[in-house]
View 1 (tube, rainbow, N blue to C red):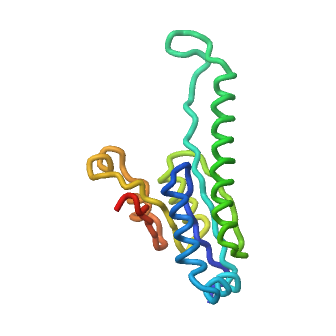
View 2 (cartoon, rainbow, N blue to C red; view 1 turned 90 degrees about the horizontal axis):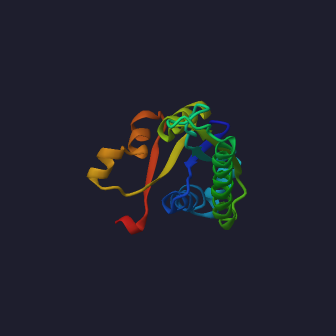
Length: 168
């Protein structure tokens, strides 16, 4: 038997990701008291993973030749940090509502979400990846790509893509 198992849940600002976290806690980890006790005994860790989009890279001068303000860059960085804090607080509140006593870790990456999620899942040797689905239609998914589709094809562990009931 494996000593520790890790379930990675990708979280972001969306209602869909918080629903996926709730679904994970309800269906994978605390379906009943025996499952919750087994998760604790198996040293299961729930990893909340948030991926910050990369900040745009600017030279000292913008296209018009004006000096690009460090205040603007600082404001963008602060906004990203505030967003991380807000998302993690919401995710921890969802976790607390389930009253489970398992380990929880928070990870924050930066870059293209699909690449960061796949890399983190592989690096952690995760047992399961849980993601929400934004419910994009065929055309939007084709144009924008789907992070969950990409991850399902590229990570080595099972992937659970949770569709929000409002998208049914």
